[in-house]
Image (cartoon, rainbow, N blue to C red; front, side, top):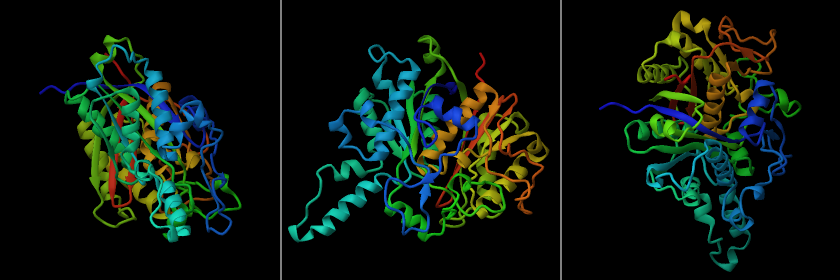
Length: 420
């Protein structure tokens, strides 16, 4: 069976550094940090009092006020990013075969703020008997973002959610890619969303000692591959890519950002939260993605790394890159856009895939910010080009994006310049 070719024809994004793909990309290229003290809840008694919130977003500019009340914050982000991406794709909703258009959206946690609110309310009024909002469950469940998007557009193709912690939306993109290249759909609206910046979300990660506690300097707290890194910075938002079968895209005259050419998956099979110290799962997932794409290590020019700014994770990913790419590792550009957006959990893969696509399209690699030359970790090889502090212009023929999740879930997606 001959596999179909898959291209990216639309983008959408709601992130801590911009509420559109254009705003987000401009911030990433210019090294803008999205970290600041929390405003969504009172964090004064928490170990971590800051994160990367979405800012200045008027949700009712996109969604009817009545419908907003039926959506958790994570679904609102997903919905808005999908609206942007479909509009950007130039899709004619009157002529497209909606039975051949699907929605696959990832989320790591789902409606945790809705859950927190409902349980808190019930706890305060339990003498009244069970009393919950009728939208409690539909707002909370992980698949509802995909459902809401398909309902709005009337897309009847494959529709579901992927959940693999921080690898969730990369797995969503991989599934969408496979649905299209196997001929099961013409287009998939795919990506991921997350909104866990609430007392339960932050408190839970604090209890694990996973988050940075650099409360006196939030903007510089996310410092991947620097010795003084002390944990990741939680973020929120959504990213969406329109993946489309090439001939379908050409037939309707769609603009093409890049071609998606491969995906990989693996498991660390090591620990419920920590990555394998030698990066064995990370190594395998990159090897799998390269094989799937039919590319050699030297064909890749840029890796948007998982790079969460955690003590173990950054070291293991750097080791894995050296193991997979060998001498070619030193010709790569490597960067962690989490140094600016924070860690968007289930939305990370989609937002970082968007950044990877735009790096391929524009021949610009966004930086890894917040690094000082005197803040070097002896376990990291700084002969690798981590693109510290300043974006770098270079030809980006092909690029990969890595995402790794609690439970040892690893996902990798690869994009390259589109050519006939």
